[in-house]
Image (cartoon, rainbow, N blue to C red; front, top):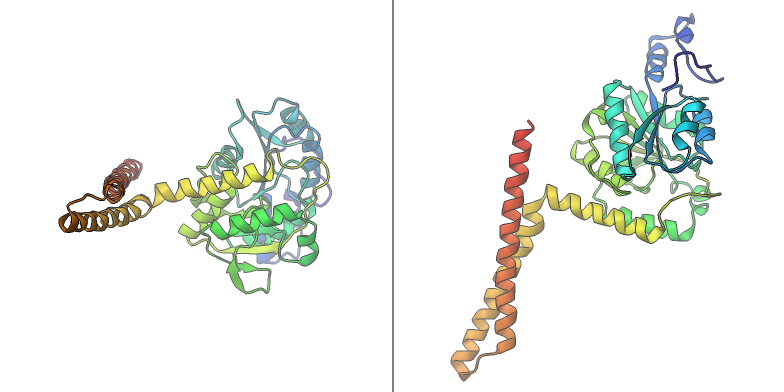
Length: 337
């Protein structure tokens, strides 16, 4: 958040705008909401770009919050000097923790909307208002700046990133999204975009728990759980200079691991119980066949006996694990109601 005495950059909405004659009730509400909107930037070692990002963002939204995730450079000092409110983590905990801090802060400040973008200058700041309009109008709860709605934008993305995003989009269980202002609803095309706007409703309901880069997928999974409405809007992106701190393979594996962990904890009976049940009965079938063979020949089929036994024991272990996890998670939920 900018300091009280900061200069207002051209293009921002200020308190003086509220007094302008001729504003309709809808326009006045939009001004009020834009005044309370917030842009959040998770940042780690972004001293080369963070000041420029903050100042460009302030041309569109006055309230900028940077979460410095344990950087060992001048990211925090430069962001604050540029006019952002800075929240510092004592150590590097991952993008997910930075996003969690942003959502917590937005709830504390009762923000009308939260826009998130990276601190490396990838995202064009002038497209912020396009995303904001979609959530401030209360038509949608989440607006995603998508790199894959238009061919021109899609072709700017390196091939390995397109492939990685496609793989992660396939395995991320998201709800349907409106693809563009006049588009039909379909699956989310850019599940890994960090350039998003969240409505006040989304801010209240979403609580990121994933610590790593999988947080973007986790948020979409939570959005589906809470029936939040999603729209994707075309967005450009620049890959000039430094971008991700992690390589594409590590990023993909991290996100897929996050999805698996989320499903494990939210659907423990399904994740462990169903495979365990299948393994148990498959082991019984193999065991019965082994017993039949022994009755017929007097010789135990050692391989079948071992496989059947392992399946029965493994299936029971998975089933018990699912029941224990289910009980622990339900008890935890009851404690925090």
